[in-house]
Amino acid sequence: MAQPDHGADTRRDRLDSPALNVDSRNENTDSLFGQRAFMHFWGARIFTAAANQMRSVAVAWQIYQLTGDAMDIGIVGLFQFLPRIFLTATAGNMADTHDRKALAIGSQIVQVIVLGALLALTLTHTVNRHWIFALIFVSGAARTFEMPATASLLPSLVPSFMLGRAIALNASGIQAAFIVGPALAGLLYGFGEGVVYGVTLALFVGAAIGYFSIPSAPHERRPVEGGEWQRFTDGLRFIRSRRIILGAISLDLFAVLFGGATALMPILAVELLHTGAWGLGLMRSAPAVGALLMSAFLAKVPLKKDVGRIMFLSVAVYAVATIGFGLSSNLWLSLVLLAILGAADMISMVIRGSLVQMQTPDHMRGRVSAVSSIFIGASNQLGEFESGVTAAWFGAVPAVILGGVCSLSVTILWMRWFPQLLKADKLE
Image 1 (cartoon, rainbow, N blue to C red):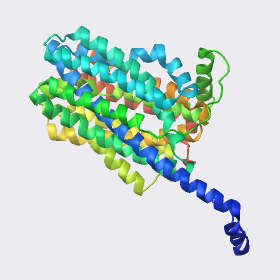
Image 2 (tube, rainbow, N blue to C red):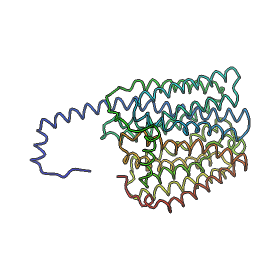
Image 3 (spheres, one colour):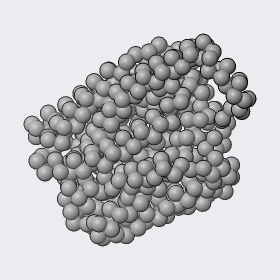
Image 4 (cartoon, rainbow, N blue to C red):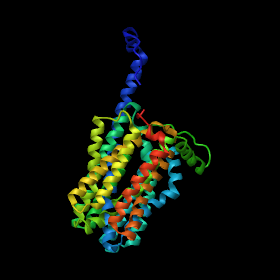
């Protein structure tokens, strides 16, 4: 909020003040450190996002080629999510009590080991569904620690006056990686799974180097009282005490849980759209294209009022686009619908992320981010399992359409159950 103007004389006195000159020098120093730290962080996040997308495309296509079973595609999502049930409390507490940079580096090293194993098994033709499930489980465990650590690391790297711009730039870079990663994986898959896994392995190595090269700065870590579970439940109570935050993240959980069609793309690519791995790569990239365009638009035209209604509208558009995607038998129409789906999800994500960041103190960011990661993981990985199960029961197309209908129903229910969220006016 802007400070009141007390007149030219007072302003001149402030400009001549030695204390202000010291503050200005400190701000310049903080700004230079923040820019340098952010660039390393940003590069590492882009590498990680692209690597995760490439691995997801390769694993989904590979296991479908191995077994031809929609249930196995869903089980991949389940094995990615299971570690969060057991490790999220520990991950959130560690992000508040340990070096977040070290946690991020450690998670990348584990991912390097996982990709190295997938590459070796693929090249020796000994890969099977059991190895894939086991390695994806280990990868999911690493990501459980990575998410709260990196989510809470960024605000500690840049001064507060740079945070908004840093968050926007970080989101844009990740969306760009979401575009390039799947498309590149689809193209490289034509040269073999080993090529995709090799490039993905290199990206994880680059991410580890990026996190390692972030310049260190002393940041206070407050001692957290109570046992591990008690500390984690502090985050749960914090979220529960704020109906707007609870409504926002639970809306995302159930809307994406039912509406997510990502897991079924390999089946739809082959059986409905009659395309190959390159088409699957384009399909996985299309939502990110829409999200990137929408993030650029929001940077030019920021949300100023009626953010609650806008968020509900965006989730409804997401659901309708999902239904349309399930009904489409044309690749290019499907790509357009997926881009619309991604744009709508970006609007919802910006609003949700802003609400959570503004109302969470730094000493609780790790635990709140850990709780939020359970919701995100349930909506994404557990959503993939739900999609695989319904596809095995009813078929891929009915599963996508049913998911979109359920997502739309959730939107209507949440408008009734969380009127505070519907009436939210500004991101302040």
